[in-house]
Amino acid sequence: ATSARLLFAIIALTTVMVSFLAVVDGWFVIVRHDRTVGAAKVAQPISMRETWALSFPFLAIALGNVAMSQVDIVMLGALDSAEAAGIGRVLIRVADFAPFLLVAAAVPASRWVARLKELSESESNAFESRTRRMTALATAFAVVFAALCLLFSDYVLGMFGSAFASYDGELAIVLIGRVFFCVLGLPSVFLSMLGYSRQLLISMLLGILINVALNAVLIPDFGVAGAAVAT
Image (cartoon, rainbow, N blue to C red):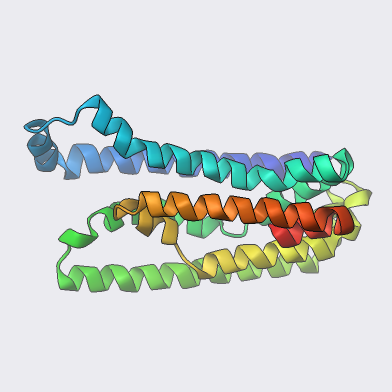
């Protein structure tokens, strides 16, 4: 139990550090880089209604991310048992550490994506090259992390209790999904920062509906394994 608390504390601290980097990066963009752009925007202020219209898709996307991360656990509890929901939550939280590098890279990448149309051809090519290297590095990290988790699954899952140790197969399924997530790179960042937030929102809503449907079909017969496949 102590080891499990320590692992969750490390993950929580990592999340706080990434959020802090996002705040620092945003401050740098606003205060240091976009002074002239900001001055130009003041001449044509945006109304509150326009601000809400522009920001609502991002708010909905954030809520969609929360829903996507919790729907499997909620449906496990509703269609199986509270014990199954607890096991599923642990498996998902452990696997969520696999794409850590990719999630961290989204912070500085978003600033460059927002300026993509303004970059010269050489800058654009350099950014494309960095993005490919970053994706490859994040994928390699996810593969190594997944391999280590499965190789030492008895210890990793045993930290949460002996009852978790037998769910190494379900953990493997969730980890495979996280590895493919890294292979795809950062499509959500590109879509949201290039003005396609509504299309991203629609695709996310479709993903939630598919996830709910798969969970409803698979959980009654396969339990935690069904939720892992749906995830």
